[in-house]
Length: 295
Ligand SMILES: [Zn+2]
Image 1 (cartoon, helix red, strand yellow):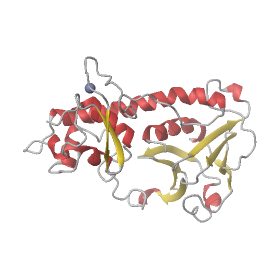
Image 2: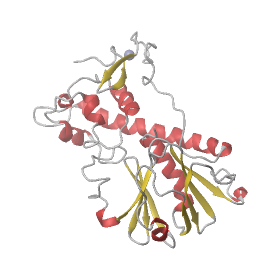
Image 3: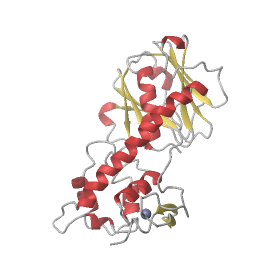
Image 4: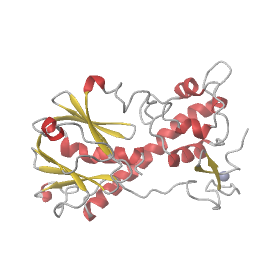
């Protein structure tokens, strides 16, 4: 499943292909993906210019000249293919000849700049919607959603405000989409490891009695941003490699310090600990019992 950094990588790959261009022809090849497409989907897109391509949690948001926003979610296996004739005019970019329509190419966006953006989704857990810009925050997709972990909103103070008085284990609190949106299991494990925090410590332990962030809370906010940014950077470099292969965007291998390393020696210099796995709310947590002591 694409995690937030992958979605951000896809956004950065699509941005130059889509922003400033108009949809000239939109071909919708199925009535639904995970959910039905909105009514008159192609009609509402054709002729509209893409003003900006943003991201909120794991959603891509294309702002259209009509005032509507094209909301796109990749689900489990969604990906975009960017095709442009005369790719040699833009060396190093992700343009690549795409050999005809595949069985899982569900939407084809023809753009006024000559680019074709194809949405491919083998498992069809992705979806698309059209929402008026003014209603986006209150729409079913975003109402009640927590703060954006890659933005400036995330700080020690925010963590203190969100976690004050909470006995929930840190791991669960960080995965709670109503508090922080789009932070996946992998990145939570990595961030807790780098901060030296035990995944089962109560979330409220990052807050002082006065309601202020502890040093660890401030450190955690910085580390979360670092972990995500590094993954985005890694995705960016692999993005170019991938483009040479099949033109698809957004999937990359990334090496982790604790995630999926059960029974391996801890990577912290001088640490004799062994990466341990425990199951919290049905999901695997990887951590080093030496570096991440319960205080
Ligand atoms: Zn360790």
